[in-house]
Image 1 (tube, rainbow, N blue to C red):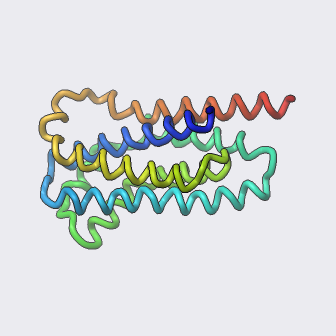
Image 2 (cartoon, helix red, strand yellow):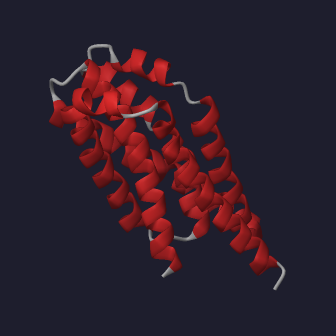
Image 3 (cartoon, helix red, strand yellow):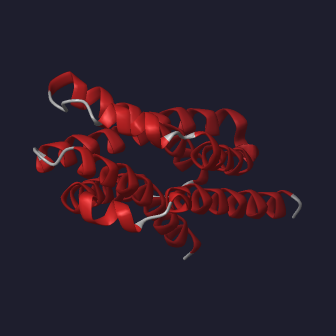
Length: 186
């Protein structure tokens, strides 16, 4: 039960981040929505897999401390999303003509936070295949919706809404950290 809840929180927080980036892209460019959504979904599925491989290897090496470390990593990703991610830089990247290598490098740069999340997935022991499929699915859906309705949605959103994904991810990290610390003391 808790594992399913963790997966849902993780996927939705990543989905919100993808959605807000896609809204900005939808304001700037709306051609090639399906192709952009597919590339973003692939990047957001590949990055956690890379992080997952690193996380599983680290999990074998660090053993009992894996959940503590994964909680701390999610909290650091959250802090980065809330305080250091610069939407203006993202919008500048997104304003370029998104074709070929420019599209691929933009998708990879936007999905770098999934690398750290993938590392945590490997440490907290959620079902890998299901989690990756859900991350890719939400990335496609939220990218397509953001691209399609970006011009209409952007004016209604305040600056703070972009930090919601970071806050949710931080709460998940805190929850995992507290749960791990309780289990270490028992």
